[in-house]
Image 1 (cartoon, rainbow, N blue to C red):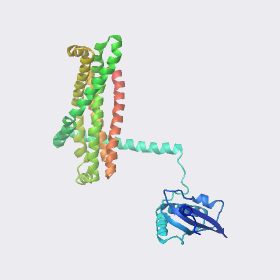
Image 2 (tube, rainbow, N blue to C red; image 1 turned 90 degrees about the vertical axis):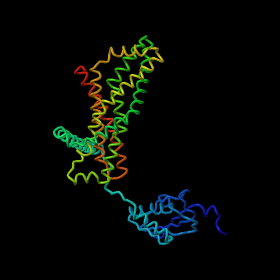
Image 3 (cartoon, rainbow, N blue to C red; image 1 turned 120 degrees about the horizontal axis):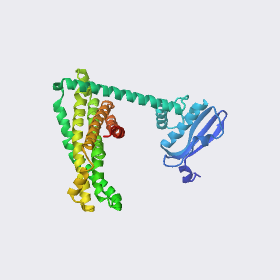
Image 4 (tube, rainbow, N blue to C red; image 1 turned 60 degrees about the vertical axis):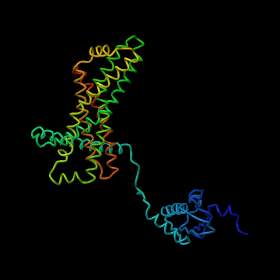
Amino acid sequence: MPPPPDVISAADAEARLDGDSLIVQLSGRWSIMEPYPSWTHVLGSHRPKAVRVTLGEMESWDSALLLFLLEAQRWCEGAGATLNTEALPQNARTLFSQLTAAKVLEPANQRGKSFLNSVGLKTVHVWGMIGEISYFVGECTLSAVHLLRVPRKFRWRDCLSEMQQCGAMALPIVGLISFLVGVTLAYTGAIILRQYGGDIYVADLVGLSMVREMGAMMTAVVLAGRTGAAFAAQIGNMKAGEEVDALSTLGLSPVDFLVMPRIVALALMMPLLAMYANGLGILGGMTVSLGLLNIPPSGYWTEMLTIVDLSDITAGLIKAATFGLIVGLCGCLRGLQAERSAAGVGKAATSAVVTAILLIIVADSIYAVVFNIVGL
């Protein structure tokens, strides 16, 4: 009498000793979607010198059988035993041989990295990055000196094109963000100041915050995501297409040809965009003050002028110019460091944005301390 269907369908592996050999008989349906025996369970306490796989009433098989055999092969390699799979079908033996040939074995003497080892490797990596950044900044400095000495050799047409892209084309998004920032500041200030009857001081809060901090900061963040990533992607694509190597072969400096027009464009346009952002932010605060606090625009403007002076505007413009240099340097540096692939270009664009925003915040913190010391 044949065995019941459910017994035939279940994956099974029976092991019996024959001298120093372990005979493993496979039967049932071996499917990766269903439970199947593990080699550790089949082996038990046996420690044979040879393992021979035979077939019983096997209904079907897939990669589950190969994984079982791979586990057995790994145990045999560690125990110094041999594995005999001659009884398997030819296609199963072929796939199993390809699997064992393609698998990557970790070195036996590989040990986990200690904490000090990891810290040392990260320190070396950071030190190398600092060296690359310093070398790039030095090249840009030399190129800027050369620009001041021989301005006629500068690529003014490329610079004007980049000024249009990072300046005029960025006006809508910068204006929208700045207006909403002004609205948010005004609403937040109104919640607190209305409790003490100081509604009019919302003008001081919005005006001073936008002129000294938020105007330059928000413009820099927007351009870091918009223009810095574009610089990294453009130069990264040029590097992947070996255009940067072609420039070096022709005796042209990639820094002079690709980097300086973009950095100069951002350094010139960032202060103008910051002034534009200041105006839109103040307008947003004025709108909220008129609608929520019933403060007329003339009163709002007059009160704002009592606290915002030329030193505040100067501090904001200095920050904006510095942020523009940071965005340009980070975008171009990551583009030149990009790997020669599509994935490398994407990583370069992401790294450019992250690095630029990080350095912008660091620079803003340094300026806050310096301006407080000098009284600006």
